[in-house]
Image (cartoon, rainbow, N blue to C red; front, side):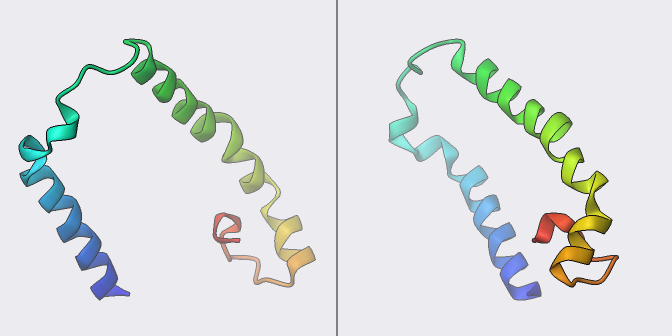
Length: 75
């Protein structure tokens, strides 16, 4: 598991190092509103959708036969 994490971190670092050489990023996005809409979608997921399963974690654990401390987000 640690090796996988190290490989993913190295890959992310390489992307940041070589981001200037990626040619397909040179064009203008389709809409200037697109990044704002993406940010709002991510904010919606973190603020409204993810807290719901966390509030019902005990019910999930009981019904699925998991330990009570198992995070419901792993399911």
